[in-house]
Length: 227
Ligand SMILES: *[C@@H]1O[C@H](CO)[C@@H](O)[C@H](O)[C@H]1NC(C)=O
Ligand SMILES: [Cu+2]
Image (cartoon, rainbow, N blue to C red; front, side, top):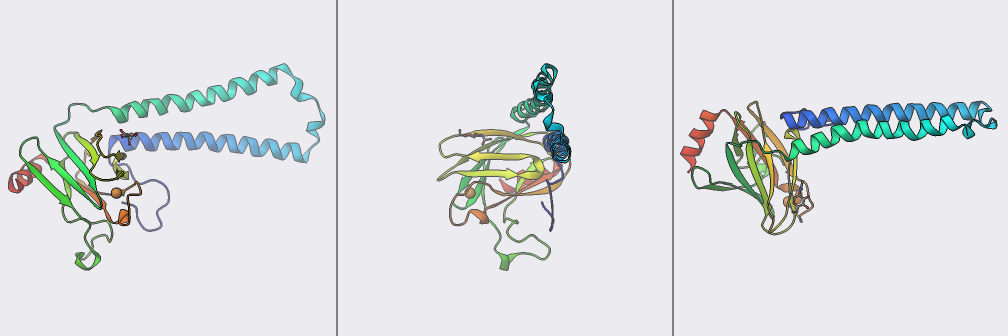
């Protein structure tokens, strides 16, 4: 989750989010370099009388300002496409969980090994245990195992919602009548918070998402006792 006064992106808790953070830093550095160069050029032109020369007519200059931006765009496009295709990949997941958005709560369905289905509502502030996060904690968390990747199928029952967990690098639209697929991997145990990210009505801000990653053995015990 984000801490108070948090600037920038959340720490990466999945390999996918690491890739996204790397791409963000890479692109930001290029933007920074271009901005510095433009700022410097403008300053020089303003402070000196360089623009009285006819330097802009030079053929070589024409070549440079065509080829250089093309090269810069390629160094952004290639890592971007790589990450884009990585996000689409679902490599042998160990289970499938169906996530259904409702006005205004989420439903999770585990149907691989047993029939388990539950609703996940936000905990109202007056019921919040000491030390838990207001407007983020839910009554039933989505539990996943740490060892393998999980396939999540995302859809909605009524209107558009969006299932988003920033630290895992996931944001997927939940569209009524359609299924979206993404893979969720958390190598470490932990609790990850997210929120509905598509305006879906009056209680849009009160349908948070909590994903809890636990070791496989714990996950199996949890599944057994709950189904
Ligand atoms: C999910 O599905 C909808 C409609 O099928 C699509 O518009 C959307 O781009 C998909 N992907 C994500 C990442 O939300
Ligand atoms: Cu919603």
